[in-house]
Amino acid sequence: MSSLINFSNITISLSGKSILNIDQLDVPAHQCTLLTGRNGSGKTTLFKIMAGLLKPNSAEVHYQGLEMTWKQAKPYIQKDIIYLHQQPYLFDASVADNIAYGLHRLGENKAAAHKKVMQALDWANLSHLAHRSAKQLSGGEKQRVALTRARILSPRLLLLDEPTASMDTDAKQQTSLLLQRLKSEGVSIMISSHETHTIDHIADRHLHIENGQINTLERAVHSNKVTVLNTPKFNA
Amino acid sequence: MNDLSQASAHAFQLLLSGNSEIWEIISLSFGVSFSAILIATPPALVIAFFLAFFQFPMRRALISLFNTFMSVPAVIIGLTLYLLLSRSGPLGDLRLLFTDKAMVIGQIMLSFPLLVAMAHASFQAADRRAWETAITLGASPARAFFTLMYEVRFGLIAAIVAGFGRVVAEIGCSMMVGGNILHATRNIPTAIALETSKGEFAQGIALGMVLLVLSLSLNAGVSIFQGKGELQA
View 1 (cartoon, each protein chain N blue to C red):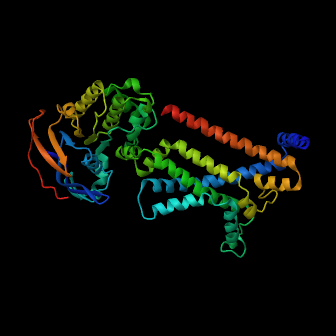
View 2 (cartoon, each protein chain N blue to C red; view 1 turned 135 degrees about the vertical axis):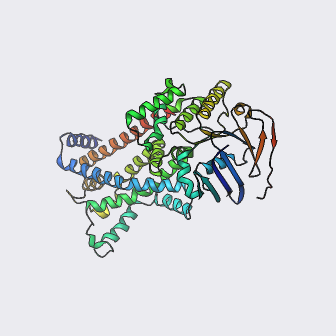
View 3 (cartoon, rainbow over the protein chains, first blue to last red; view 1 turned 45 degrees about the vertical axis):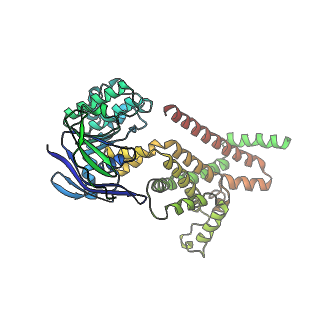
């Protein structure tokens, strides 16, 4: 199992309270990692730090053979890691325009960008929604559009915050299918979720966050049976 | 009552006949106010964004300051600017007093706090996910800022319209630093005040009608624009 990115000594305090104090967090390449933890345990905070959206008090990053501080690593991680909110935000534009949003930075011309968007919509089976206003979509459709919008940028790691929360069974299945396809394309995925049964069949590894620290849970791949491998001391 | 009807009829005649003096006043008024809003808006939006999205020392004090300056009377701004621009003032050498440029500066000072305060409220109400999504999708901070402005455009346009409404109808500052000089600094409000004091109601009513139509049009425009936003949401 090769490592995609490694974070160490992640600490962050908000209003004087220690939220995270993680010694090591290794994200394996081409694998799906499930992250569980109680509400308020710091899952979203961790994802935002990993995506370069939230500045930690301290964090070191080992990425592409380089040892960097979080600040030095920020441009790299913002380029290669995409974070999706629990309820993804779609801009006030059509679905196609939303998916094309990130292509600007790649310097794609209009024709090439349009072709890519159409292919991406086709990949997600969303072609029929191309010209629909993104604000009018259902929760499940929004999640799938957000996944497609992320995929078109070829990220190396996708961080998904509760991707199937508040969805009906059908929407959960469709989202789960897209996640499986993303994983089969070699995208590393990290998912925070309470609904482990929905994600379970694609997860290779299970991490649990508690008291600001991460426990690795050993598991038979794609099974519900988990045992705690290591339980670091909480020293907040 | 009869006098009022006659004056109103005369006012319509003045407007429709293309009276050069009236249209010159209208054009100067709009030119000065548009220039002021055009100059004040970009920095006001950037400051409002920083106040809403970033934590830094004195942030709350700055917000309170802008809120306070929003309600400072135009005549106080006019007096301050007069003292600064008068020959013996620190900026007297610029020789700007009683010019349309001085009126533009005064109107910038008047509209700026209102623009910042109203734009700040819009950014404050914006969904933070919009900013984070733009950044995580690879947008530069500048592009993410423009994206965010688009997402809250209804509130920002309302702020700009309110700012324009405040300056186009103000009289205190324009009178003090402009001097109400015909063909140079006479705008709609100062002309209305002058003509009314002379008992020439027709021209005052004509110019008043222009302001009224402008106000109605701006408000109708904002309502229609915001209505479209509600449909999409």
